[in-house]
Length: 383
Image (cartoon, rainbow, N blue to C red; front, side):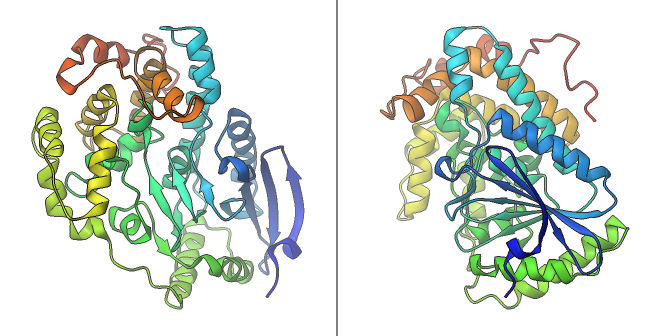
């Protein structure tokens, strides 16, 4: 079997991202982005976002690049989210104020996500291991999302006083029934079968099939027509999927859709009451309950409001809503306390601003959802 490295004809490296182009039999090239911060589970920082955006924009225009692959170094994670420590320190230093650091990071991260959604050429994400938060933002934007037997996918923002951003307003609201609301409130970790069921993944392969996939991509008859390349890549991965050694298994979420819809029905207050008294023999559901109840009441409200956006907003409008909410929640929400408890002091004892769902004032939510830019919002004409 040919090693991927043997096929590299060009490689450039920034500190935390590696860019390669792989030669193919058709003469076309495959651009490969490898997140290269294994010790930090490939969490995204601003420099990584900027490096990826610059390279992807070049590859988008390059007629030799037929396809792009996003991968993560190591065996633990594709990407465990965004590196939010810099945002925490900036927000603590400017308590109660929207910081320039938050504006810049979230705007550039969301622009990268939007670029992937609208790339045109096939973008394949190898979603092996942990794919959470900002990592899911990258994966959700890809046209070919491949998961494996080790994939663990979640939007855990409720645990740090945030909400499911990076396009969650778009993809969560397009899931079956109340599934998006459930995932946003509980930070439930999806396996491969769950991800395929809710539409966050397109294909299932085994971790050990990665080299086979790259070998097959190298021999694919890539054309000058993106639509044709999408179809050929689909067919190739489907063929590999039929030969996996470890089966995908069944989706717990699929089997529990009706129950999840019942749990998430009614007002937010109804949901909190129902979840507070929930008793089940299903360990996964009790873990979801406990994570939800330990989350930020401000975040509960934001996730609930987000779920009511429905499917009428365009992708660009969703990112506009999120940019406003995200920069404000760093200043006026529970973000700093959530990050402190989970990542800074690591005591896992967050002292949320409000003790329960009914204590959160409407004025606080309105403040979080009011654009700090006024009419001059950076995403007024996102393209």
